[in-house]
Image (cartoon, rainbow, N blue to C red; front, side):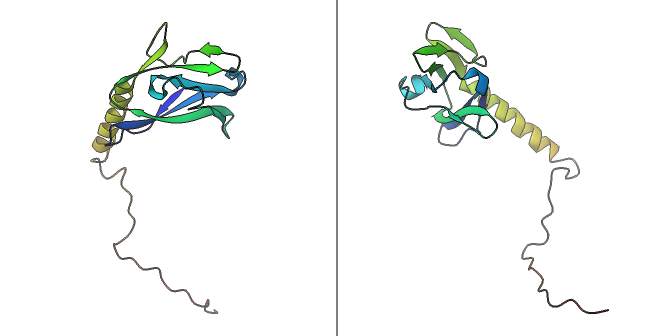
Length: 137
């Protein structure tokens, strides 16, 4: 699984590469053209949910080529890649950005319906009331 962060104004986006524990045969890294194919740049680590993951900051405006490299020189691809060739899986980051744009548009549209997504946090300058002893009855 690949989880995309929201694209930043700096032309970068965070991608989190996630593998189920049963798919990880030992130490494994995500390597690709975004990290110079360096197996030490982005090693996956165990997460609390039982998966293995790592987050990489990548350019948000281009296609990436990547693979996973496991201990012993074992290469494998991510099933969520857009397409594959002899170099590995390819991921079109623009496709992920388009998903964020759709979500932002849906959120903005939904926000115009009776304030369904609005949160009332009280009047501006609200002060916390002072509490004293509880009066006896």
